[in-house]
Image 1: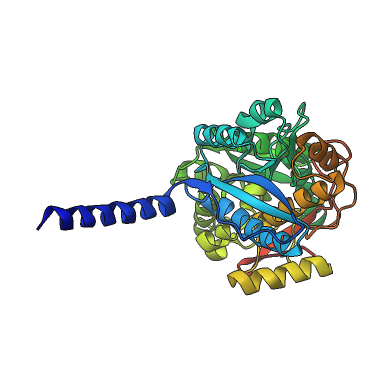
Image 2: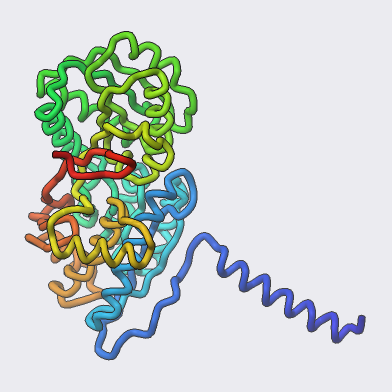
Length: 383
């Protein structure tokens, strides 16, 4: 082969390799359509977990997020230029991602996914004065003491009492057993809220067992609980461990109702657990069969786009973008982060796919909660 031909082939190979790297990288500037005439450009970061152990949550958020960005950009008032990066559900990676987004002077950051990630980046975005919105961050207190931290989901301190109160009224249970992940900050927080909520309802907790994230064998814990025959079982777990526990419970003949926290609010639970997930309850601000035209239109559009029903994470990813757009319109700017933050904090009765939402000068919204029950492999409004 001549030197000239070899150099041409080598150059072509480098170009192909560069293209592959650009597509397969962990994050970066996302291609955007050209802004419509008169639209104000808004740079926003999107820190999600498209890979890793909580990818089902992150990908759900991304589906709703992408759909809302496309709708806003077509509206012609605001044009979002999105810098999307993958945290992989890891605290250290989330910190690196947020630092990069701060250096790139994003006007708003949406994400990251987990409460542990969100807690770790709080001081960074506060010092940078960049409004940051958690999509599915439900641990207690993560926005407390911050001016620039927000979330569009309610914390477990509101979700779980709603679950316990409504299921207690519905099922009339008197005793409960609790299993929770003791090395997961979110689930430890959920356990504490479950405990005080059950005690407030006069329910006796007759057993408490722990496990760790990524455990696969729960026989020891369940064989301790089974002979006690609690009226209800509480699981503070993400869907991966939760599904395994449910399957083992049902195999052992433990057919009690199960109460879960926000980690259960994913279709992945039903996919992994199958019929074992029936008779499981969780509270949520999201219900696909909510009687609202906004909700109905969103569900129909989502199903047309993705050929499936939206879950809570998709719905909250969608409404997070709408929340940002609404705040920017009210603030009259897509670049002044202080004015955007002030608008975000004072939004009241914003109509969303999850019902009316108000912030009342705090980082957590006021929104109606519903009780969901798993029936025939899907979440339905509990009657």
